[in-house]
Length: 342
Image 1 (cartoon, rainbow, N blue to C red):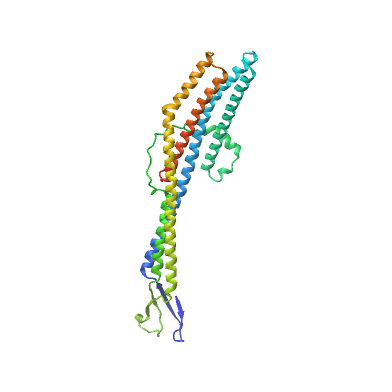
Image 2: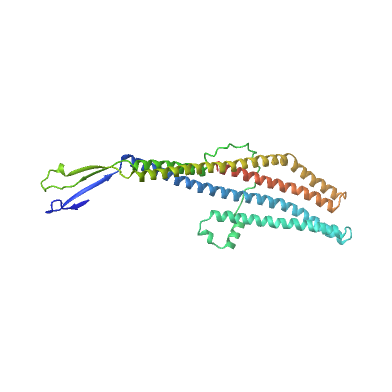
């Protein structure tokens, strides 16, 4: 709005509005739309990361609980052996070396059980804190521990169907989508800068004549021609450089995630082969070792040391199986995370 005195005898009001070339508004609208899309994709990144962390910790709880149950079974057997060895030592049936070996083995397993129990509690605390809000995280830690013991139930770690090698498609990965969206935004920015170099327009109402001048003679229109072309060229060049950087960042992100995916796929094959071995052969052999060692020990055909060494090897097979099963679960989860299929 203007307010001036064209003749020096009175004041007049005027209105003037400048407009850019229409394509400027078109490309600005497209740019803003793509920026909204980037914000949405960045939100998907946060959601994908949160899902991965929660599921990973939950799987850790399942694995820790499975290990605890397995070690508890071994601890029960070894405690019985320790007590039997102590009684036989007291009556002079076995010597001090055998008793010490039995007590040492039982103590090691009992300590492993205590560690496994604590690991379950720690993982549950981590999951609960991850799923709580900021205000809830400020509650007393001791109260959290009691609550966990009372109401936190976990499904057992199950045997997943042995998956085939997944595809290398990373198109659904939110991080890839976000970097591609950023590259698209940089392209839209180039269009905006090019459009800014186009002429602009101006229309208005501005009375420079007498009060009785015809209304049609009070209107004005004009075209603004950019004179300093260099500044527009520099801004366009800067936008183009930004676009090239965004494309390179996208390709680098794809390469990094593709490398991670290939590594995870290799681990999947390795763990799948190990699980096939455990499920087809090793677990059955471990049960046979434990059963045979027990029969020979009860029949007096083997001593405490032989029984403990044999059963320890068998129980270690079972623990290695659970460890491999845990890694297999985590690898499947990692692949789903990388491919955006959580």
